[in-house]
Amino acid sequence: MRLVVTGAAGFIGTNFVRHALARSADAVSRLVAVDLLTYAGNYANLADLEADPRFRFVRADIADRDAMATLVDEEAVDTLVNCAAETHVDRSIADHSPFVTTNVEGTLVLLEAARQRTGFRRFLQVSTDEVYGSISAGRATEDWPTRPSSPYAASKAAADAFVQAYATTYGLPAIITRCSNNYGPYQFPEKLIPLFVTNGLDGEALPLYGDGLNVRDWIHVEDHCAALWHVLGLPAAGGEVFNVSAEHEVPNRDVTDVILRLLDRPASLVRYVDDRPGHDRRYALDATRLRRLGWAPRRRFEEGLADTVAWYREQRAWWEAIKSGAYRDYYERMYGGRLRDSSAAPRS
Ligand code: NAD
Ligand code: TYD
Image 1: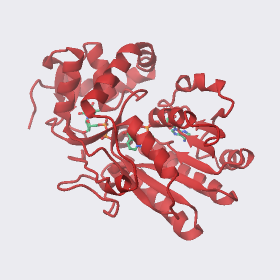
Image 2: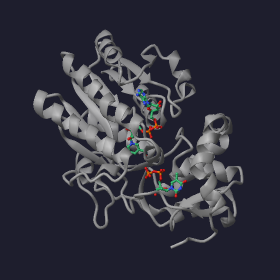
Image 3: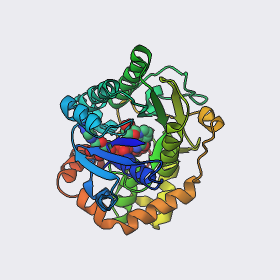
Image 4: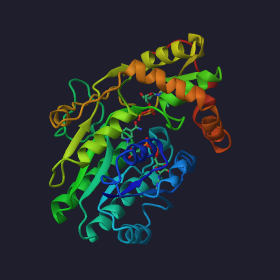
């Protein structure tokens, strides 16, 4: 496999690149890691991999048509895993424009680069359960309609639609995975778990949205990466969707309680703040299709979360560097007013 992984310096990209390079040189002969290094990308996550002769890092924008076409051609790429995206729902509510440029236009640029390359074998679009919207009952299967709620989810659903259009119109062997909420090492501390773990480590407030009873379906990032690797080996003509989930639902309040217990911090750190607009109540995926095709998650939530908390405890220098500078402005903008107006008990 001559593989490009985009968004390689982000959370899932970093974990997936490490997973792929742990395979033999027969399986992966070349891995080109592409990342624009936005606020969410961190080259330090990958620096030690430069010692592997199969590895190359390229700083580039997936929406840059010439750069992507040249790269795919020069490196004789046959497989592309697209992890590059703007990924935070709250940021998409504040400003949708980078979500359209990267998630929609960037995906189209990559699809076009893959289509122009002869011998291209597999395009894997890493998507999300958020495209199905809030699930009031049951679990979403792959043939559920997409009903995105946030600008982030809308941009991911649009990208998925283009991937399917390229498979149908041009016969591109492009497939989609839709995964539930991930946790694990290298996650940017704007998402619930790393934000609450790092705030908790510093004895700072944990801002819980609304009544804290929104439900997310959690999976360890290693299980997600194993699923991505597994689908790359499946026979698929193009256009197929595979849900990825450990089918483990937890309300945000319970996630928070476990984090506090693991950190040995008091419940008084929890602050209930104004809810996110359009906040999806519940995500729940049915992953039967992929399980029948031989993949299964391995990590149990409580044990995986304990390992994750231990990782952030040990990697203080990694997240302290992130949480200085521009992050502080972001945090004040996103949470300053809400925390000043917060309460110790749920509002509704
Ligand atoms: P992340 O925000 O941690 O990383 C995204 C990476 O993409 C960053 O390194 C960033 O620098 C890079 N990037 C952004 N714009 C770029 C551009 N224009 N060109 C090149 N690189 C660019 O996100 P993540 O959590 O690793 O998510 C990766 C993918 O997985 C996304 O498509 C996301 O929708 C999907 N996903 C994430 C989760 C989750 O829980 N984190 C769950 C399901 C699906
Ligand atoms: P998040 O990690 O942003 O993932 P997503 O919204 O993409 O599922 O949020 C996970 C859940 O945690 C979601 O229900 C929103 C909630 N949340 C809070 O209560 N407080 C916070 O500060 C954040 C970032 C999220």
